[in-house]
Length: 365
Ligand SMILES: Cc1cc2nc3c(=O)[nH]c(=O)nc-3n(C[C@H](O)[C@H](O)[C@H](O)COP(=O)(O)O)c2cc1C
Ligand code: SF4
Image 1: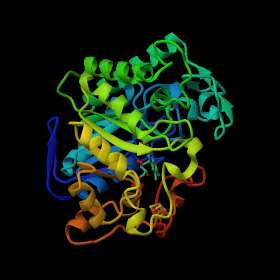
Image 2 (image 1 turned 60 degrees about the vertical axis):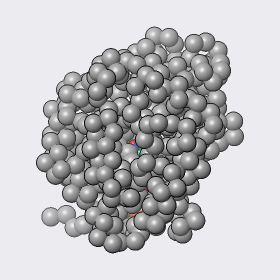
Image 3 (image 1 turned 135 degrees about the vertical axis):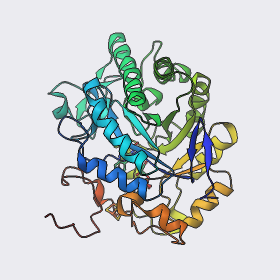
C-alpha cells in the first residue's frame, strides 16, 4: 500500500510517503531561498517522496522562531520561492509550504528584544521568557499575515499550504488549554480555543479560493500535563473541517515537553509510529486524509499503519535528512531507514545547517 498513489484535493501523490516539515537552517539571514536549499529539495524530489512539506516558513516578523528559517512574509520573497517550486516540479515532485508564527517559543534575541506573542502572558521554561498576551489588533494582524502568506505561496507555485498548528507555536498555543488561558472570543473553553485556527483557515480560503489544497499539522497530544489530549484535538480539527481543510497531519509535544516532539532512540519496530493510537482515532472520525508522523522507520511498520487504518499517509522527517532517496530505496526493497534517531541533527545552535551528523561531512571544494 505504501507505493499506491493517493489523490486528494487535486493533489496526485505517487506514493504514501510525505516529507514532514523540517527546518534546514539553509535560508539566508533574511529567510530568502538559497541554492543550498534548492539543492536539498531537488534531492528530496529525485528521491521519490510523494509530497514534500518545507520547513516552517515565517508569515510575520513577530513570529521568527529560528535563524535562517525560510520566510514568506513579504512579496519580495515570491521570486526566490518560485525558483524553489520550479526546481522541485522539474524533478517531478510536489511541494507544500508550511506556514508558521512562532508565538511564545520565539527566542527574544530574534525579535529585537521584544517579548514573544502568545494567547496568555505565561513564562516559558525553555525560552526563559514571559510572553505578551496578544491584543485583538495583534490577533487580526497575524490572521491577515497567514492569509497573505498563503496567497504568496499560491503565486509562487506551491502545490499546497500547511498551517503549522503543532509543537507549541502560536496557532498550537491557542488550541491548547495549557497555554491559552484567555476568557474572550479566543479562549475560555474548548470551542473558543478553536477560533484562532478557524479564522486563519477562513482567511486563507478567502485569499486562495476553494480549490487550493490547505493542510494543517496539529498536536494530537501536547504530551504535557494539562495540555491537549487526542480526544480534544480531534474535536478541534472536526470544527475546522467545514471551513475547508483538505488533510490533517498528526504530531505531538512542544518545547516544554522536551524530546517528546522529536522522540530519540527509535531502534526497534515497537518504538515506531508512537502516535498511532491517535491516528486510529482521527481516521475513524474524519473523512479527510490523515498523515501520521513520528518515529516511522521500517517499511513493515509503515505498511501496518496504513493497512490497520491508522493513517492514509506516512510523514517522516529525520530518515529523509539521512537518506533523501529513502522512498526510492524502499520501493526497490530496502526494509528500514538508516536513521538511528540520535537527534544530533537537531542541535541547531551548533550546526551551520541541518545535516545527518552520523554521515561523514562532504568535503567542500
Ligand atoms: C531537523 C528537524 C527540523 C524540524 N523542523 C520542523 C518544522 O519546521 N516544522 C514542523 O512541523 N516540524 C519540524 N520537525 C519535526 C518533524 O516534522 C517531525 O514531526 C518529527 O521529527 C517526528 O518525525 P520523525 O520521527 O520522522 O523525525 C523537525 C524535525 C527535525 C529533526
Ligand atoms: S543525525 Fe542522522 S541518524 Fe541522527 S537523528 Fe539525525 S538524521 Fe537520524
